[in-house]
Image (cartoon, rainbow, N blue to C red):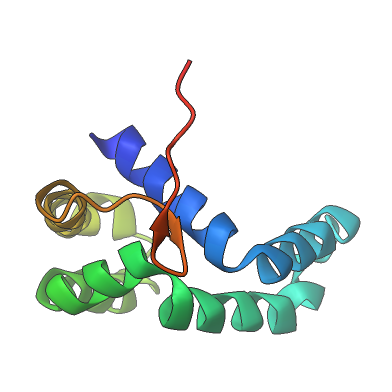
Length: 121
């Protein structure tokens, strides 16, 4: 389910924030040596995702507690570079919650409420 979750969210982002997504990734491609130049594009894309992407909005609403715990763990362990060891459990809890949102609400990528079908091989 984890790969499907990632695919659904990415498809949803591309469907609902296409210009922001393309501009940010073009900036990253063009500035491989200094991706910090893309900070503004990252912020614009992040705002679009939070405001317009149904799957992300649902996950952020319903999974706020695991998200807060994971975020706090990252902050607490940033200086010691022990995020992988100490925060993996919190990340797994967050992903489980997100997967439940996608599964239980049958979330699929959509544009303006019109569902898009994922293309499967």
